[in-house]
Amino acid sequence: MKTFIKYDYYTQMFVALSFIILLITDIAVFEKGYSWLGYFLMAAFHTVSFLIRMFSKDYSKSTEFKIYSFISLTILISLLLIMIFDDIDWVTNFIGLILMFGIPLTPILAICYLIIIYKDYHGLVQNS
Image 1 (tube, helix red, strand yellow):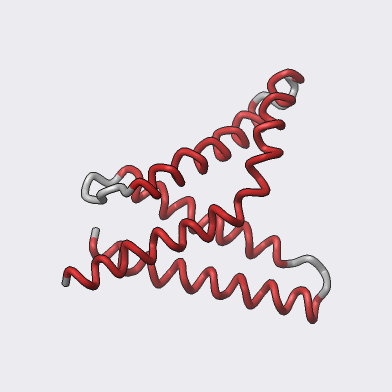
Image 2 (cartoon, rainbow, N blue to C red):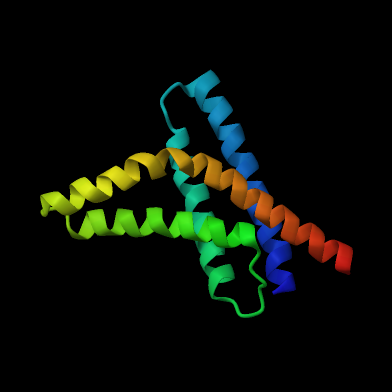
């Protein structure tokens, strides 16, 4: 798990920095709205990393990670249920209400996840 934390830290920081560069160049140069692709790519990296950490027995889950897990899983499961039950109105209306509050939180969740990874990595470095 120590090797994963190290590689995950560098990968997540590289992806986040790449997204920031893409966002700035998209706003300043392209003006086409391509930055949403980078946002979904960053979300995919976070989700894979999050799932590996969540199911790992060697990873000690902090309080911040547990809170992040609860909120993130609520949003992910809501998106999945919307896709599955798209023809049932009351389900999509109820879950749509959850997503109305959850989707705007995703940039904050991304920053929180980077902070969690930063703390894990620097805790690992200090213990070595």
